[in-house]
Amino acid sequence: MSMTGNIYDEFEWRGLLYDATPDLREKLGSESVTAYIGFDPTAASLHVGSLLPIMGLARMQRFGHTPIALVGGGTGLIGDPSGKTAERQLLTKEKVAENIEGIRAQLSHFLDFEREGNPARIENNHDWLGELQLIDFLRDTGKHFTVNYMLSKESVKRRIESEDGISYTEFTYMMLQAYDFLELNRRMDCSLQMGGSDQWGNILAGTDLIRRVNGNKAHGLVFPLVTNASGTKFGKTEAGNVWLDPELTSPYKFYQFWLNTDDRDVAHYLKAFTWLDRQTIEGLETSLRENPGAREAQRTLAREVTTMLHGASELEKAEQAAKVLFGGSLENLSVKDLKDIFEDVPSTVIPRDELSGEGLGALELCTRTGLTASNGEARRLIRQGGLFLNNDRVSDESGRITAEQGIDGELLVLRKGKKSYHLVQIGQD
Picture (cartoon, rainbow, N blue to C red):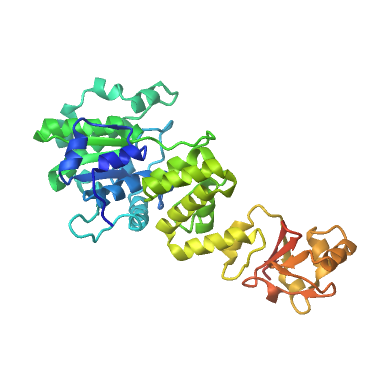
């Protein structure tokens, strides 16, 4: 899909323009530019905090510009002090290389590497930083940076005032990022660097270095850092980061993360993280005001972002999984899916041998798990039609339950009434 108009205006109406260098609107409206954003390979997966810059590159591509995702194979060995309160652990070269492969696969869900005319590219700054000679770098690049200028940057100032200070290693990060921009300008005619607002100082250092070294005019554009109305950090849950890798954060949990968006944040997230147009988003805002209980805006957000990353079939499974807690079918859901769904539900491990052969009586299983206080209560529950096994009603009070009825032979899901669940994990011999 291609879009027309000026991408600058698109960023503006979506609330994604925090700051930009002068004349950038005119440049983006009159010519096709090559733009890059840096991604830090400190983990094998990106998390939802990286979605805004990824979407920034994807939007650039749809408006006819050429996006470069620069993976910091070189700078990732050092660490960026921006937004950090403490020095990070240095990674091995092998670990960085492994992480880059994971990131490359995730970016392919958003960027088109085969697109005719302006295909996306992935570059690794280790290709040039790894070959730098220290003396040459200090002479040719270091001379353009005054220590006064570097000390004035907010990220450095904050760390100097902290108890642990900042190492010389991380202090040099600004120069290395500026050098990346210079190299991409030389090699690929890249004239725009984008990123979060905490990168503004580093980006300007790059535009300044390009002007000094080869006389070219380069630009910067930064997005606001994503926050949420509740005051917690965006992309964090009680369980930790929400990752783009389905092995680390299942599509169901990913879907639930967006579905649980606060009413105060959902309009902003629809603008920032989806391809929906202004008219559609304004319609969802109206729905939110007039009928907040329907949560149509949240459901649309969750559907759009989950489909974009995981595809339509995983969205379908995530939506099916969301209905399970309300008595929906467990068909086609894996044990992993169910453990995610029932993460906060009480569970009991019962040895497999107790559930083999004739298995356990339904009444005994209810009392054994604590779902009911006594066999008598369990009997009454069954007679009233209020006991369910794997969301199917149990009607025989003298019935037996075996491991064969378990999902993949591993899990039994008991339910009392509409919403009182208990998970039975079948122990391995």
